[in-house]
Length: 133
Image (cartoon, rainbow, N blue to C red; front, side, top):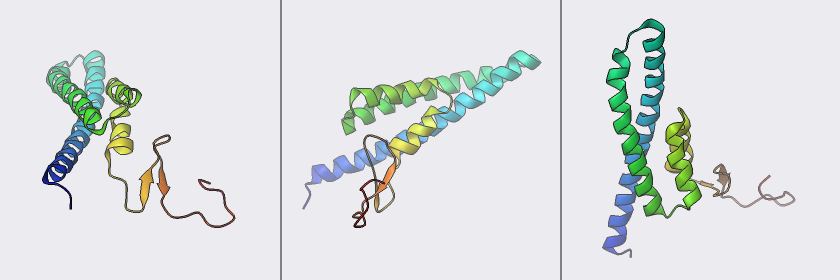
């Protein structure tokens, strides 16, 4: 039977992952909207969107970085993965990829390989076939 502290740690890690998913998608979306608002500002002369979305995106950027650092510490990510997750914040759609590849819980019967991040079946290979093909 798991200890009570293990259950609390599991719940806390699950909650942190859920928060990281929401913040990751929100940060990427705000970045895209800010890029659109910037285009409108310089092409049509309407800076209102940048005035509104700039601070929102800034807050979400900081929240994204904080949640990625907390998640990396809790999951003991290697430094390279942590830096990639943080670097994703400066690319417009990269946080969507981080959310999809590293933050989602794999479907039942599938696991993610650490090297590629792609789903693989946990079933035994069919006789006569090479594993992983």
